[in-house]
Image 1 (tube, helix red, strand yellow):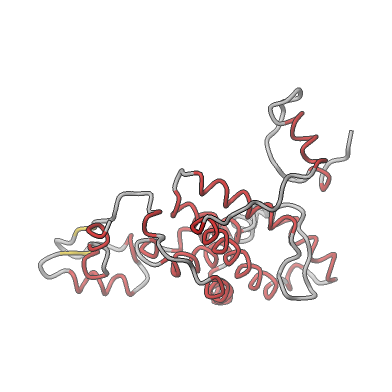
Image 2 (tube, one colour):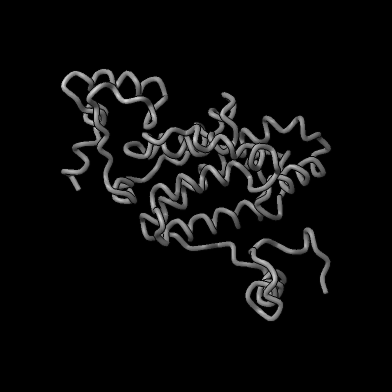
Length: 249
């Protein structure tokens, strides 16, 4: 592991007879991993997944601060959450350009689907755990927490989304606060930080062996799930609360 880490310094990331300095200059522009290589330069990343490089607890409050900051700088919710996490994770995670998640803002270029903050945070979690169980358990809990928690945290102007959809999250916030969707900027800025921080918290807990899921599926949703998701009806897929969109039967 130490031998692998040795190649991950900024100087060794792009290596050539005269290209190391050029590579560092490119990295400093924010072009990062997909920047054109300096002549003769090579890229040597460690084998993926990169869980072994998540070797110290994350600063949860720093992640929260950066998530809000990057949203405020115009990165959007998905890129803001992703960028905050990979920056605090450090190398090699921060070699992945955060722009890869920019599409996720507004629930996917404003389609109102999966909340961008959840999307970006989940992508960062996946960089750590890959196809491992850590990705599934953390992202599952993050979606459940987001659905059931009044967000943003620490404000009177918060609301419970009921599911992880941007559409529902914004609509319920507008109902709860009397504000318009066009006024959501400060709300989504704070929420981006909160979601990224929650993902960081779960990662720390999993690393420490203290992670315990706290948001089980409700009995009402489980009754629907058992029939419609692989059960007698076997006609849909999902874990969201059904009552927000469907009447009982």
